[in-house]
Length: 220
Image (tube, rainbow, N blue to C red; front, side, top):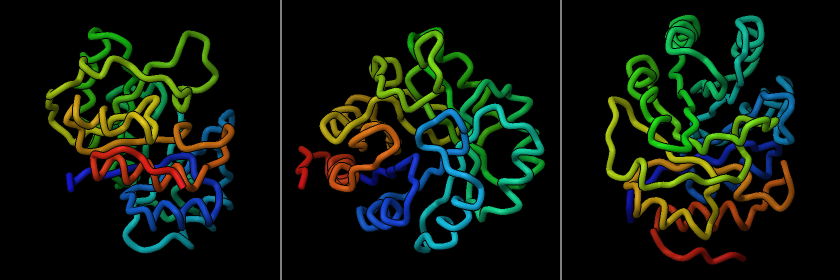
């Protein structure tokens, strides 16, 4: 079985987390971007993280959050990682990492080869990279739009830090994405939902199985 680490993002209920943990995912993502249908409040996130089983890496997704917002999140919610999913500069990534003493994952949107250049700069300051599909112009959300990009752009590439593939992944295509890119980590949100912000537990299990076993999904 390939050693593929899976992140399920945008979880909102205890049941979401329980299914994610039982499926064998390594990361759970909590979305703090208010415009997202997957967003949670700080009290909700605290309750979920305190309840989450041991061993799951608990990740907070924020978008261009200021220090006051991050202070409130980090002080109240027991987290293992911060995911910066906005237009944060490399300098801001380094600042956040130093201020909070938590590993930082920086998301970078990719649509063509020209979008790969910033990954080197971010790899110098972040602990991990998340390579996502670049949102369309005018999109309300920086991620979770269900869009893919040309996976050949990142096939067999290496950066200075571990990286995670995101963008339009589903139980049906994640095995192909892993084969084409040699990604060792994958992230999904909208691809395992029955409606925006509503996780489909069968799809979560099928996604993790397809990613880790490199085989066809078996939805239940």
